[in-house]
Length: 338
Ligand SMILES: [Zn+2]
Image 1 (cartoon, rainbow, N blue to C red):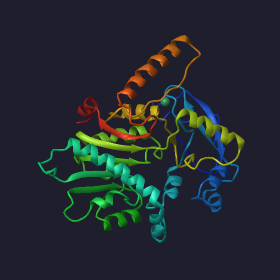
Image 2: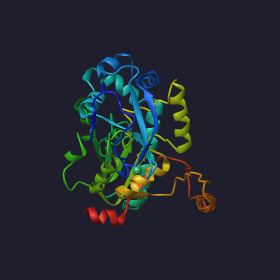
Image 3: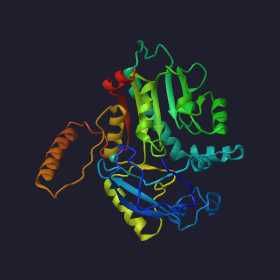
Image 4: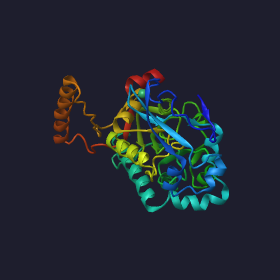
């Protein structure tokens, strides 16, 4: 993998292979300048340029895979840059907790936890009063300050809560909140399994999301459920963002080519999870690329549209175009990983 040190001009003519399907066939989508990203984000200021050795004009390219249509950062930052990006010092913990636990973010964390627990309630063995016999094992990958999960760590609560978090300062904070912590997936003891796994805003940050997701199979049993959320770059939104980049002004703050290395649509998220060995718990997403340049493509799209109208009518699609959702291990993939 080519490490990219900031300060070296991002190339626009070459790209890494697709992190979903590993195809090397891709096209250039756009290149965004550092100033566009930094001025669009409330979390950066001008000190970023010097700290990371870039100028406002440094450009970062995006590619689209010609085989699976995933859009991704053409290059990934070097390990050193990634570590500096996500470093947290003790002094800033209090400040950062305020950001991570702000009402909007906390609401989302509790909403996703609620969906996960609702799904687990249907799947785990319970007694007549709804009690589970053993502790419900929850793993939050990239859990930051444990907003949501640390609400399950009270005395006598029937949960065992674990979190994966790179920063040692954050892990100390989580340990004080009763969360068992690991620095990396590799540090989780071999043979550990979890009933519920959370990945809130994680897959877009990792350089190899398909490989990362497939490793989660090792921590699953047949009844495990995953909750996943990534920013939604459905085709029409990506097209609009590319136009904004071209105009040179502000861009949405979830377009950040050194932090967000993949830009999923509902379709590419499902494709990635499928390759990794998971399937949607419910069909909760549908998306179209209208292909009218061939008769066969148009007919195929029309047939899919009719099928999905039927599914909508039968209420089998709770959300139309979501990059959030519940996934379960595919039985065949799970038996291979055991
Ligand atoms: Zn691909």
